[in-house]
Length: 171
Image 1 (cartoon, rainbow, N blue to C red):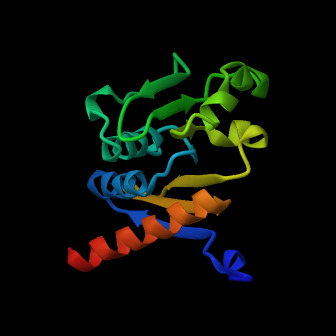
Image 2 (cartoon, one colour):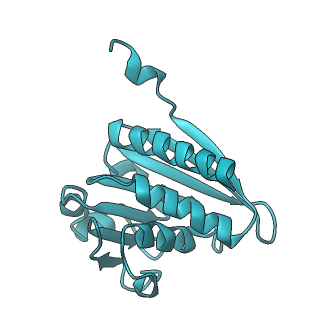
């Protein structure tokens, strides 16, 4: 369809009022995840990047007890419905250190890449990326701002928004 891609939503915002709602949002992202997905997570310390990642991975059939922040090891790999590659760029000194991890191979490995502190390496992320910015707005309240660039990310964004809306109708 001519012009259909430009009419797809590229942004969406969701407010979570609890860890339970954040976990449900992460599950919606995990259920929408596709092979080759790159998800960039941005937010201050304590915003919920790892909590969201745990819920995404759990929805991808990874044991949630295995999912921890890879701050000191930089990357964690998990076997699930799709392979999950969880990066934490917080302690990296440069974009080159990120590239030295072999990230381009991970991006092309057919799994789901979740990158915490993605703003630190934004210039080397693939063209197709789902960015999720997390703002702390209260003790347990977070605002999740999604921005999709590329066909996989846009498809995921549509699915996430639809799944969350459907869950709210049922709840």
